[in-house]
Length: 485
Ligand code: LFR
Image (cartoon, rainbow, N blue to C red):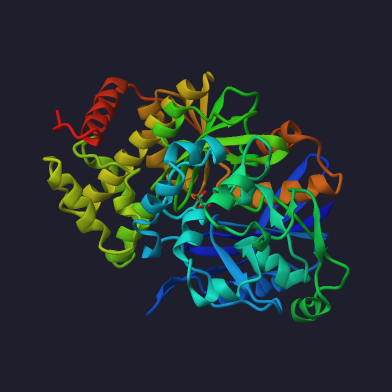
C-alpha cells in the first residue's frame, strides 16, 4: 500500500485528503479541512492565499508519512511574482468585479468567434485572458516577472520549482486545445506576454521535492516528491468519474455544476460557441467538453443569508414543494457575484412573471429545479453538438450527496443518474499520483477501481419528462428575449 496526499482547494473550503492505494484497494480519508474565505479589500475581492498555504502545511502535518503530494484547485486565478520570486499582492478572486465590460473591449481586437476558434473556451468574464486585460496598466502587473496559477503557486512554495500545469492552463483562454500549446498569435494580438507563464507540465510529471523548510514545518521525513496532477479540480474530478465505456455524461457538482462529456478532440464549431460550451483539457489528451452552470453556489449563498439552517431539513421541506413552479436560468452571469441571493432569485422569478418563492424551502426548490433543468439542457446540447450517445449521467462532487438534486436531475434528463464519489477531485488527484508511480493502469483501469471501491447510488428517472421539456422550452424562449409562455 502507498499513501498519497491530495491537496484539494475549493472556493469555500480546502482539504488535505490521504488516499491509500494498493492492488484492488482505494481508500480516502480526510486529514484536515479548513475554510477558504475570500477577503473584501478596498481594491476588491481577494483570495487569502497565505491562509490557504497555512492550511496546506497543517494538512500535510496531519496526513503523516506520504509517498507523494498532489495539488488541485479551482481554475483561472493566479498569483504574480516579482523578479525575486516573491508574491506581488493577494491573488484576485474570479468573482471580483474588475472584469466587468472587459470582454467587449477584447472582442474589438479579437472577435468572439475568432477567440473561440483559437481557444475553444466558453465565454466567462473571469477567464484568465480577461483578467490579464483588466490588470493592464496596474503597478502590480508592470512589476510581474512570473504568473503562477493557484495550484502551481502552492507547488512552488512547497518545492521551490515553477511550472504551469496543462489542464489548468487550458482554462486561461490562452491555450490552443488542438496543439495543447499556447495560442501565441492570439496572445500577441492582445499584448499578453506569454513569457510570464512557467513552462507547461503534464499530469504525472514530477514537480519537485518538498523543501527542507517544509519538511521541518510539517514533521515529514524527506525526500517527499510533489507530483503534477490534473491541477484543475474539474480535471481531477472528471478523471474520477466511475464510468464504463464512452456513452456517459458527467456533472461535477460543487460551487459550480460542470456538465458535459469527455471527448477525444475539441468541438470548435460556431454552434458550439453559441451554446457556450468549453473545451478544457483533461487527462491523456482528452477534452472536457462542458458548460459551466452556476451550481450549488446559488444554495450556498442563500444558506449564508439565512444564517446556515439545517440543510437536511431544508431539503426535506423543498422536496414537498410542487415541482417546476418557477425556474431561473442557472447559467446566467447575473448570479455570479456574492450577496443577497434569495432576493436576486425572487427578483428573477418576479421579472419573468413566475410565482415568487417566499420561504427558504420554496427558494431551495426553485434552485434545485433550475439546476436540474440546466443539467438537462447542457447534457442534451452536448450530446447533439458532439454527436455522442449518452446512456447514463454520472454526478460526482459534493452535490452527489444531495439526494433531491440527483433525483431531479435523473427526472429532468430522463436518464439514470449514478451519484458518487463526492470527493471525486481528491480521488482523481490521488489516482494520477498512483499512476505516475506505477500503481494503477490506464484511465479505464482507474475508473474500474473507483467503481469497485467507492459507494455509488443509482437514481432512475421517475417520468414526467414532458414537464421538464416544457419548462426547458419556456426558459430557452425567455433567454431568447421572448415573453414567457
Ligand atoms: C470548479 C471550477 C470550474 C471553474 C471555476 C472557476 O471549482 O474550477 O471548473 O470554471 O471553478 O475557476
